[in-house]
Image (cartoon, rainbow, N blue to C red):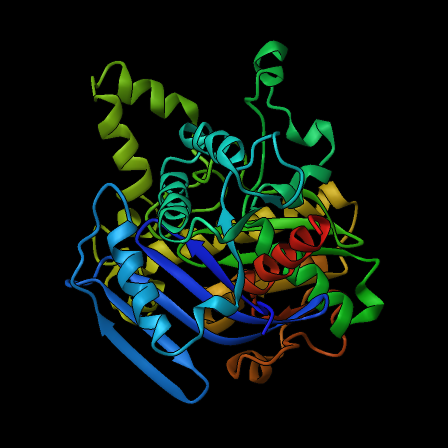
Length: 395
Protein backbone atom coordinates (compact mmCIF):
# COMPACT_ATOMS: atom_id res chain seq x y z
CA UNK A 1 0.00 0.00 0.00
CA UNK A 2 1.30 3.45 -0.93
CA UNK A 3 1.91 5.77 2.04
CA UNK A 4 -1.39 7.50 2.74
CA UNK A 5 -1.07 8.78 6.30
CA UNK A 6 0.48 11.89 7.77
CA UNK A 7 1.39 13.04 11.24
CA UNK A 8 1.06 16.59 12.55
CA UNK A 9 2.94 18.09 15.47
CA UNK A 10 1.76 21.27 17.19
CA UNK A 11 4.47 22.08 19.72
CA UNK A 12 3.79 24.35 22.69
CA UNK A 13 6.16 25.21 25.49
CA UNK A 14 5.12 22.23 27.65
CA UNK A 15 2.94 20.01 25.40
CA UNK A 16 2.93 18.67 21.87
CA UNK A 17 -0.39 18.01 20.14
CA UNK A 18 -0.12 15.09 17.73
CA UNK A 19 -2.54 14.36 14.89
CA UNK A 20 -2.83 11.34 12.62
CA UNK A 21 -4.59 11.94 9.30
CA UNK A 22 -5.54 9.96 6.23
CA UNK A 23 -4.88 11.62 2.89
CA UNK A 24 -7.60 11.53 0.24
CA UNK A 25 -6.29 13.39 -2.77
CA UNK A 26 -5.96 17.02 -1.70
CA UNK A 27 -8.12 16.55 1.41
CA UNK A 28 -7.35 15.05 4.81
CA UNK A 29 -9.39 13.25 7.48
CA UNK A 30 -8.27 12.98 11.08
CA UNK A 31 -8.30 9.44 12.48
CA UNK A 32 -6.58 10.00 15.82
CA UNK A 33 -5.26 12.80 18.01
CA UNK A 34 -2.97 12.88 20.99
CA UNK A 35 -1.09 15.09 23.41
CA UNK A 36 2.40 14.62 24.80
CA UNK A 37 2.31 16.32 28.19
CA UNK A 38 5.78 17.18 29.50
CA UNK A 39 4.31 18.71 32.68
CA UNK A 40 3.19 15.28 33.91
CA UNK A 41 5.59 13.08 35.81
CA UNK A 42 6.15 10.73 34.14
CA UNK A 43 5.55 12.29 30.73
CA UNK A 44 2.22 11.05 29.40
CA UNK A 45 0.98 10.38 25.89
CA UNK A 46 -2.80 10.79 25.80
CA UNK A 47 -4.37 9.48 22.60
CA UNK A 48 -7.94 9.50 21.28
CA UNK A 49 -8.72 7.15 18.39
CA UNK A 50 -12.40 7.13 17.55
CA UNK A 51 -14.29 6.04 20.69
CA UNK A 52 -11.12 4.64 22.30
CA UNK A 53 -8.85 6.65 24.59
CA UNK A 54 -5.39 5.74 25.83
CA UNK A 55 -3.30 7.34 28.57
CA UNK A 56 0.24 6.06 28.20
CA UNK A 57 3.01 6.84 30.73
CA UNK A 58 6.43 7.16 29.09
CA UNK A 59 9.71 6.17 30.70
CA UNK A 60 11.85 8.78 28.95
CA UNK A 61 12.33 12.21 30.50
CA UNK A 62 12.40 15.49 28.58
CA UNK A 63 15.91 16.77 28.13
CA UNK A 64 17.81 18.86 25.62
CA UNK A 65 16.56 16.61 22.85
CA UNK A 66 13.25 14.82 22.41
CA UNK A 67 14.51 11.75 20.58
CA UNK A 68 13.96 9.31 23.47
CA UNK A 69 10.42 10.55 24.15
CA UNK A 70 9.52 10.50 20.46
CA UNK A 71 11.06 7.03 20.12
CA UNK A 72 8.68 5.78 22.82
CA UNK A 73 5.72 7.61 21.29
CA UNK A 74 6.51 6.22 17.83
CA UNK A 75 6.87 2.75 19.37
CA UNK A 76 3.39 2.99 20.85
CA UNK A 77 1.96 4.27 17.56
CA UNK A 78 3.59 1.37 15.70
CA UNK A 79 1.50 -1.03 17.78
CA UNK A 80 -1.68 0.58 16.44
CA UNK A 81 -0.68 1.95 13.02
CA UNK A 82 1.42 0.66 10.15
CA UNK A 83 4.13 3.32 10.34
CA UNK A 84 5.25 2.53 6.78
CA UNK A 85 1.99 4.17 5.64
CA UNK A 86 3.13 7.56 6.96
CA UNK A 87 4.23 9.76 4.07
CA UNK A 88 4.93 13.07 5.78
CA UNK A 89 5.13 14.80 9.15
CA UNK A 90 3.93 18.41 9.36
CA UNK A 91 4.97 20.79 12.12
CA UNK A 92 3.52 24.02 13.44
CA UNK A 93 6.33 26.55 13.84
CA UNK A 94 5.50 29.79 15.60
CA UNK A 95 7.97 32.14 13.89
CA UNK A 96 8.87 32.25 10.23
CA UNK A 97 10.00 35.87 10.28
CA UNK A 98 10.18 37.37 6.80
CA UNK A 99 11.93 34.22 5.56
CA UNK A 100 8.83 32.08 4.92
CA UNK A 101 5.60 33.20 3.28
CA UNK A 102 4.03 29.73 3.42
CA UNK A 103 4.61 26.11 4.35
CA UNK A 104 7.97 24.60 3.34
CA UNK A 105 9.64 21.22 3.07
CA UNK A 106 12.21 20.83 5.81
CA UNK A 107 15.85 20.14 5.11
CA UNK A 108 19.06 21.09 6.90
CA UNK A 109 18.99 24.66 5.54
CA UNK A 110 15.34 25.41 6.38
CA UNK A 111 15.67 23.82 9.83
CA UNK A 112 18.75 25.92 10.57
CA UNK A 113 16.89 29.02 9.38
CA UNK A 114 14.01 28.23 11.77
CA UNK A 115 16.52 27.69 14.57
CA UNK A 116 18.03 31.08 13.76
CA UNK A 117 14.72 32.74 14.64
CA UNK A 118 14.71 31.35 18.20
CA UNK A 119 15.51 34.73 19.74
CA UNK A 120 12.22 36.04 18.26
CA UNK A 121 10.11 33.31 19.92
CA UNK A 122 12.11 31.87 22.83
CA UNK A 123 9.11 30.14 24.42
CA UNK A 124 8.08 28.05 21.39
CA UNK A 125 10.74 27.98 18.66
CA UNK A 126 13.29 25.77 20.50
CA UNK A 127 10.65 23.11 21.14
CA UNK A 128 9.72 22.99 17.45
CA UNK A 129 13.37 22.66 16.42
CA UNK A 130 13.99 19.88 18.95
CA UNK A 131 10.93 18.05 17.70
CA UNK A 132 11.88 18.40 14.02
CA UNK A 133 15.38 17.09 14.72
CA UNK A 134 14.10 14.24 16.91
CA UNK A 135 11.76 13.04 14.15
CA UNK A 136 14.54 13.38 11.58
CA UNK A 137 16.85 11.31 13.80
CA UNK A 138 14.24 8.56 14.25
CA UNK A 139 12.84 8.58 10.71
CA UNK A 140 15.46 10.10 8.38
CA UNK A 141 13.43 8.80 5.43
CA UNK A 142 10.30 10.73 6.43
CA UNK A 143 9.48 13.96 4.61
CA UNK A 144 8.84 16.80 7.06
CA UNK A 145 7.16 20.16 6.49
CA UNK A 146 6.76 23.33 8.53
CA UNK A 147 3.69 25.58 8.70
CA UNK A 148 4.25 29.04 10.19
CA UNK A 149 2.01 31.05 12.49
CA UNK A 150 3.40 34.29 11.07
CA UNK A 151 2.71 33.47 7.41
CA UNK A 152 -1.02 34.31 7.50
CA UNK A 153 -0.19 37.87 8.56
CA UNK A 154 2.17 38.60 5.66
CA UNK A 155 -0.81 40.38 4.04
CA UNK A 156 -0.72 43.11 6.72
CA UNK A 157 0.01 46.52 5.18
CA UNK A 158 3.43 48.00 5.85
CA UNK A 159 1.94 50.80 7.94
CA UNK A 160 0.49 48.15 10.25
CA UNK A 161 3.73 46.20 10.50
CA UNK A 162 5.97 49.17 11.30
CA UNK A 163 6.76 50.43 14.78
CA UNK A 164 7.46 54.14 15.27
CA UNK A 165 11.18 53.51 15.78
CA UNK A 166 14.14 54.44 13.56
CA UNK A 167 13.32 53.13 10.12
CA UNK A 168 16.61 51.25 9.84
CA UNK A 169 15.61 49.05 12.80
CA UNK A 170 12.35 48.16 11.10
CA UNK A 171 14.26 47.28 7.95
CA UNK A 172 16.41 44.95 10.08
CA UNK A 173 13.35 42.98 11.15
CA UNK A 174 12.05 44.74 14.26
CA UNK A 175 8.44 44.92 13.14
CA UNK A 176 5.02 43.44 13.81
CA UNK A 177 4.71 39.83 12.65
CA UNK A 178 1.48 38.55 14.26
CA UNK A 179 0.91 34.99 15.48
CA UNK A 180 -1.80 32.28 15.79
CA UNK A 181 -1.92 32.44 12.00
CA UNK A 182 -2.81 28.76 11.52
CA UNK A 183 -5.83 29.20 13.76
CA UNK A 184 -6.92 32.33 11.91
CA UNK A 185 -6.45 30.63 8.54
CA UNK A 186 -8.78 27.86 9.70
CA UNK A 187 -11.34 30.37 11.00
CA UNK A 188 -11.26 32.32 7.72
CA UNK A 189 -12.03 29.12 5.82
CA UNK A 190 -14.70 28.03 8.31
CA UNK A 191 -16.49 31.39 8.07
CA UNK A 192 -16.48 31.19 4.27
CA UNK A 193 -17.99 27.67 4.39
CA UNK A 194 -20.55 28.19 7.15
CA UNK A 195 -21.48 31.84 6.62
CA UNK A 196 -20.84 32.55 2.93
CA UNK A 197 -22.45 35.99 3.18
CA UNK A 198 -19.53 36.99 5.45
CA UNK A 199 -16.79 35.60 3.19
CA UNK A 200 -16.03 39.04 1.78
CA UNK A 201 -16.69 40.86 5.03
CA UNK A 202 -14.73 42.57 7.78
CA UNK A 203 -14.25 40.11 10.64
CA UNK A 204 -12.38 40.23 13.93
CA UNK A 205 -11.46 36.81 15.30
CA UNK A 206 -10.44 36.41 18.94
CA UNK A 207 -8.21 33.40 19.61
CA UNK A 208 -8.53 33.21 23.39
CA UNK A 209 -6.58 30.44 25.08
CA UNK A 210 -3.55 30.26 27.35
CA UNK A 211 -1.95 32.19 24.53
CA UNK A 212 -4.34 34.81 23.19
CA UNK A 213 -4.60 37.30 20.37
CA UNK A 214 -7.08 39.09 18.13
CA UNK A 215 -6.91 39.35 14.33
CA UNK A 216 -8.71 41.65 11.91
CA UNK A 217 -9.51 40.06 8.53
CA UNK A 218 -10.98 41.57 5.37
CA UNK A 219 -12.30 39.02 2.87
CA UNK A 220 -10.38 36.30 4.74
CA UNK A 221 -7.01 38.11 4.61
CA UNK A 222 -5.26 39.31 7.74
CA UNK A 223 -5.00 43.10 7.97
CA UNK A 224 -3.88 43.58 11.59
CA UNK A 225 -3.29 41.61 14.77
CA UNK A 226 -2.94 42.34 18.47
CA UNK A 227 0.36 40.42 18.61
CA UNK A 228 3.33 42.20 17.16
CA UNK A 229 7.07 41.50 17.26
CA UNK A 230 6.71 38.75 19.85
CA UNK A 231 4.14 36.47 21.43
CA UNK A 232 4.14 38.78 24.46
CA UNK A 233 2.26 41.60 22.77
CA UNK A 234 -1.43 42.45 22.68
CA UNK A 235 -3.96 41.19 25.22
CA UNK A 236 -2.99 39.61 28.58
CA UNK A 237 -2.67 35.82 28.48
CA UNK A 238 -2.43 33.01 31.03
CA UNK A 239 1.08 33.95 32.10
CA UNK A 240 2.19 36.53 29.50
CA UNK A 241 1.79 40.26 30.03
CA UNK A 242 0.32 41.48 26.75
CA UNK A 243 0.97 45.08 25.69
CA UNK A 244 3.30 46.84 28.11
CA UNK A 245 4.71 50.36 28.24
CA UNK A 246 8.36 49.93 27.15
CA UNK A 247 9.23 52.35 29.93
CA UNK A 248 8.40 49.56 32.37
CA UNK A 249 11.18 47.46 30.82
CA UNK A 250 13.62 50.37 31.02
CA UNK A 251 12.69 50.81 34.68
CA UNK A 252 13.06 47.11 35.51
CA UNK A 253 16.41 46.82 33.74
CA UNK A 254 17.72 50.23 34.82
CA UNK A 255 16.77 51.73 38.21
CA UNK A 256 15.53 48.40 39.59
CA UNK A 257 18.59 46.54 38.34
CA UNK A 258 16.74 43.35 37.44
CA UNK A 259 18.81 40.99 35.24
CA UNK A 260 17.55 40.32 31.72
CA UNK A 261 16.72 36.64 32.32
CA UNK A 262 14.64 37.57 35.38
CA UNK A 263 12.70 40.20 33.43
CA UNK A 264 12.09 37.68 30.65
CA UNK A 265 10.74 35.18 33.18
CA UNK A 266 8.45 37.84 34.68
CA UNK A 267 6.99 38.77 31.30
CA UNK A 268 6.55 35.23 29.95
CA UNK A 269 5.74 33.22 33.09
CA UNK A 270 4.64 35.47 35.98
CA UNK A 271 2.34 37.98 34.30
CA UNK A 272 -1.07 37.84 32.60
CA UNK A 273 -3.85 36.17 34.58
CA UNK A 274 -1.49 34.53 37.06
CA UNK A 275 0.12 37.88 37.82
CA UNK A 276 -3.07 39.93 37.89
CA UNK A 277 -4.75 37.44 40.23
CA UNK A 278 -1.88 37.57 42.69
CA UNK A 279 -0.95 33.98 41.97
CA UNK A 280 -4.42 32.44 42.33
CA UNK A 281 -4.38 30.83 38.89
CA UNK A 282 -3.44 31.24 35.24
CA UNK A 283 -6.65 29.35 34.35
CA UNK A 284 -9.61 31.62 33.64
CA UNK A 285 -12.00 28.85 34.69
CA UNK A 286 -10.56 28.89 38.20
CA UNK A 287 -10.67 32.68 38.32
CA UNK A 288 -14.30 32.80 37.20
CA UNK A 289 -15.24 30.45 40.04
CA UNK A 290 -13.24 32.35 42.66
CA UNK A 291 -14.75 34.93 45.02
CA UNK A 292 -11.40 36.68 45.47
CA UNK A 293 -11.41 40.31 44.27
CA UNK A 294 -8.03 39.76 42.60
CA UNK A 295 -9.51 36.94 40.51
CA UNK A 296 -12.47 39.08 39.48
CA UNK A 297 -10.17 41.96 38.57
CA UNK A 298 -7.94 39.68 36.47
CA UNK A 299 -10.93 38.66 34.35
CA UNK A 300 -12.10 42.27 34.08
CA UNK A 301 -8.68 43.42 32.86
CA UNK A 302 -8.55 40.55 30.37
CA UNK A 303 -12.01 41.20 28.90
CA UNK A 304 -11.44 44.97 28.80
CA UNK A 305 -8.26 44.50 26.78
CA UNK A 306 -9.91 41.99 24.42
CA UNK A 307 -12.79 44.39 23.75
CA UNK A 308 -10.33 47.24 23.26
CA UNK A 309 -8.37 45.28 20.66
CA UNK A 310 -11.54 44.31 18.80
CA UNK A 311 -12.48 48.00 18.63
CA UNK A 312 -8.97 48.98 17.49
CA UNK A 313 -8.91 46.37 14.76
CA UNK A 314 -12.34 47.55 13.60
CA UNK A 315 -10.70 50.91 12.97
CA UNK A 316 -7.96 49.23 10.89
CA UNK A 317 -10.62 47.39 8.89
CA UNK A 318 -12.83 50.46 8.48
CA UNK A 319 -15.88 48.62 9.75
CA UNK A 320 -17.02 45.42 11.40
CA UNK A 321 -19.40 42.74 10.13
CA UNK A 322 -18.69 39.90 12.56
CA UNK A 323 -16.79 38.82 15.65
CA UNK A 324 -15.65 35.21 15.99
CA UNK A 325 -14.56 33.69 19.30
CA UNK A 326 -12.29 30.64 19.17
CA UNK A 327 -9.75 28.55 21.15
CA UNK A 328 -10.21 27.16 24.66
CA UNK A 329 -11.57 30.25 26.41
CA UNK A 330 -13.31 31.70 23.36
CA UNK A 331 -15.14 28.46 22.58
CA UNK A 332 -16.12 27.40 26.10
CA UNK A 333 -16.54 30.34 28.48
CA UNK A 334 -19.81 32.26 28.06
CA UNK A 335 -18.98 34.67 30.89
CA UNK A 336 -15.87 35.90 29.10
CA UNK A 337 -17.71 36.36 25.79
CA UNK A 338 -20.54 38.17 27.56
CA UNK A 339 -18.15 40.58 29.27
CA UNK A 340 -16.35 41.34 26.01
CA UNK A 341 -19.51 41.93 23.95
CA UNK A 342 -21.03 44.05 26.75
CA UNK A 343 -18.28 46.61 26.05
CA UNK A 344 -18.91 46.57 22.30
CA UNK A 345 -22.54 47.63 22.20
CA UNK A 346 -21.50 50.94 20.63
CA UNK A 347 -20.39 48.92 17.56
CA UNK A 348 -23.84 47.37 17.31
CA UNK A 349 -23.07 43.97 18.83
CA UNK A 350 -25.77 42.44 21.03
CA UNK A 351 -25.71 38.97 22.55
CA UNK A 352 -28.38 36.27 22.78
CA UNK A 353 -27.90 35.16 26.40
CA UNK A 354 -29.40 31.69 25.92
CA UNK A 355 -27.37 30.94 22.80
CA UNK A 356 -24.22 32.21 24.49
CA UNK A 357 -24.85 30.04 27.55
CA UNK A 358 -24.93 26.86 25.44
CA UNK A 359 -21.88 27.82 23.34
CA UNK A 360 -23.98 27.97 20.16
CA UNK A 361 -22.34 28.70 16.83
CA UNK A 362 -24.26 31.98 16.52
CA UNK A 363 -24.63 33.89 19.77
CA UNK A 364 -25.74 37.33 18.52
CA UNK A 365 -29.37 38.41 18.50
CA UNK A 366 -31.34 38.58 15.26
CA UNK A 367 -31.23 42.38 15.45
CA UNK A 368 -27.49 42.68 16.14
CA UNK A 369 -25.74 44.87 13.57
CA UNK A 370 -22.59 42.78 14.12
CA UNK A 371 -22.83 38.97 13.91
CA UNK A 372 -21.13 37.13 16.76
CA UNK A 373 -20.08 33.51 16.26
CA UNK A 374 -18.27 30.75 18.15
CA UNK A 375 -16.17 28.44 15.97
CA UNK A 376 -13.92 25.63 17.16
CA UNK A 377 -10.45 26.12 15.71
CA UNK A 378 -8.37 23.30 14.22
CA UNK A 379 -4.72 24.18 13.66
CA UNK A 380 -3.77 20.55 13.06
CA UNK A 381 -6.03 20.27 10.01
CA UNK A 382 -4.37 23.36 8.54
CA UNK A 383 -0.93 21.84 9.17
CA UNK A 384 -2.08 18.60 7.51
CA UNK A 385 -3.55 20.38 4.47
CA UNK A 386 -0.42 22.46 4.02
CA UNK A 387 1.77 19.37 4.36
CA UNK A 388 -0.22 17.65 1.58
CA UNK A 389 0.20 20.73 -0.62
CA UNK A 390 3.98 20.77 -0.06
CA UNK A 391 4.15 17.02 -0.69
CA UNK A 392 2.31 17.38 -4.00
CA UNK A 393 4.51 20.30 -5.07
CA UNK A 394 7.55 18.07 -4.69
CA UNK A 395 6.15 15.34 -6.94
